[in-house]
Amino acid sequence: MNHPKAQSADIALMLEGTFPYVSGGVSSWINQIIRAYPEYRFAIVFLGSRREDYGGFKYPLPDNVVHFEEHFLHEQAHWHPQPAARRGDAQGQALVQRLLDAFDQGPAAPRAMEAFREVAQQMMPGGSVQLGDFLYSKRAWDIICGIYRAHCADPSFVDFFWTVRLMLQPLWLLARVARQLIPVRAVHCASTGYAGFLGALLAQTRGVPLILSEHGIYTKERKIDLFKSEWIRDNRNIFQRDPTELSYFRQMWIHFFEWLGRYCYAHADPILALYEANRLRQVQDGAAPERTANIPNGIKLERFAPLRAQRPLEPPPVLCLIGRVVPIKDIKTFIRAMRRVVNQRPDAQGWIAGPAEEDPAYAEECSNLVRSLGLQEHVRFLGMQRVEDLMPRIGLVVLSSISEALPLVLLEGYAAGVPAVSTDVGSCRQLLEGLDEEDRALGPSGAVVPIAEPQQLADAALQLLGDTAAWQAASRAAIARVERYYTDTLMFDRYRQVYEHALARTPGAA
Image (cartoon, rainbow, N blue to C red; front, top):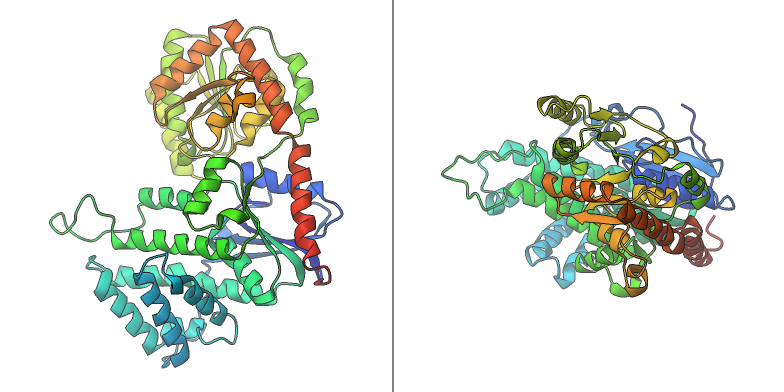
């Protein structure tokens, strides 16, 4: 595929595992943002795991994307082509040791961020902390062995050694990407993590303004993934292991992503969240409060408002979960809730509208659960659908997720007049009940239930579907809330100010 290339751009977007290869809320938002500002030339730097993990583009690149490059962080081709023993750079070793000593004092240690910056700077091509030394030098070997002896209770040094390599090796690739990227006037990251590290490195080495927009909190989401992950092994036997204690491997990954987040926060201004709880979490994780702000998502009202006329006056007994078939969406809780719904409403349908190819094993488990509960006639996997085709036919939008930010699908339902039932995650309570006194006066636009409680999810849905007056009131509140607080016009106006302020700080950089 021929990707657009340019000599310079206005804004570089650092995107990890999202647009244009992966569909979903963050990718839809990125597509919105780029298209909203045709006057700006965007460069996209896509970061993925391995090339074979992605198919084709899920979104066509907008015309104002003048430059696109992609880098896959765990490709074997990035490893040093000809292994050879080497002593390693003494200055680089001293820097790394200083960083490790600062880490031992905790994240709030005064020298920790300064040492992290120094090491990141020296990872750039020509610096004193180089990939070849990390992979093959005696000094790096001694450091790794020292960390293992000091901290790791797991008996497998082999697993520890390769975990350290897998974790850190992408940073040198990103340092090379930072050096080679075309001139840009501002950098905008859609997350911390590896993309945030790249953005912060560009801010540090080039002096360009860095904008950070977090939909979810990356470190929190990685913690959820790491707590559940089966690929992180704990080789201790039952007598060696404290069941209340995380393995050092797991802690190591968590601390790694926490530090990538802190490094990004240290260089970003502004640091944007979708809602207040996430802004406070950013501050808790190291963001300077004075740099933080909230800009909620917004949707195009004119796309969905005409659908209101197509909706029935009585609530259709159709519960629709619009989202990817992946564990974080907790599709299984939705399916279990449908068993209780169907017991009381035999005419009810549960639709799951979203791609299933991201986690085929989980999708198969969900299909098996449908069969085991005898719901084959009531629960349907629709795959990707146009949201506009769904809204006139459903009674409720349902979210059973264990983690969300500010889900666009709720706002899209609201604009079409569809109430919602959602787990109490992210900003969902704010969206359903209102943020402040003025917002709450509009009334509830659905119901909030606890995570992983299929009975409560079912009962909340049944109550709304069984009470036409309450369902219609929730629909009116949904329309009023989205029109007042969550339009794309409001969002675009706020981001235009962010971009104008950033670009004014580097008017002649490109």
